Amino acid sequence: MPEPTIQQLFDLTGRVALITGASGHLGSALARALAEAGASVVCASRDLARAKAAAAQLPGPATHHAVALDQMDPASLEQGWRDALSQAGHIDILVNNGHEAQPADLTTVTAEEFSRHLANATGYFLLARHLRDHAVERGGGASIVMLGSMYGQVASYPDTYAGICQASPVAYHTLKGGIIHLTRHLAVYWAADGVRVNCLSPGPFPGSKVDKRLVERLATRSPLGRMGKPAELKGAVVFLASDASSYVTGHNLVVDGGWTAQ
Image (cartoon, rainbow, N blue to C red; front, side):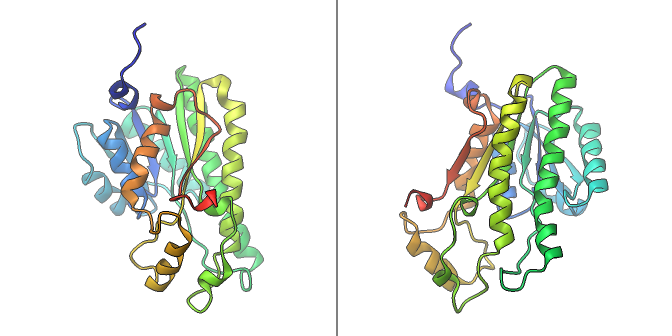
């Protein structure tokens, strides 16, 4: 068999990718990346109208789809998965990007709020298991990409947030650390099924609504001296989703401008 070219390794033509949170700050860039690589993308959002708008904005030539799916609601998760299969026929790639935020910090967060935030990981696992079972039933492989965070590996700096906003939420740090290890665990168990499971951990990628003073402080902590741009995650997600990473599983790919190298 001839050695595949680099173009062939990154080509997602003929594959179907389901991405949750596809209309969000980072999710929209990840969805565009998959579509630009040739995949048919199923855009999932809690709001079906937003999912449809996200799908409509993706480039061709593949056909894209939209489903309502809230990973925090088991019934919505199950229906969204069924709808994705019904529309696309099959799914080869899952990007678990959807996220329900919990702004309360460690001084005010309640037990119920903390536990609810961790339920994001439950949704990631249930969707991942759906894809694994689907891949086994079809007799083919699959690629799963979990969204972690640099804050799943390192603590935040209290003085960065002081006087501007609450501390980085403790439940968020707990959640993202758990997702990184969930990735490793599933990768080991599902490798024999041909299902690769990897994690993509962004560093600081603040949205437009984040206080500019906080952005300036965060930038001083980054070796590259700036915040990340959503487009800077596109290459990483295509790498993990495609055959370019065919011998990579259980890995946490960090895109953080060098933050965690310090």
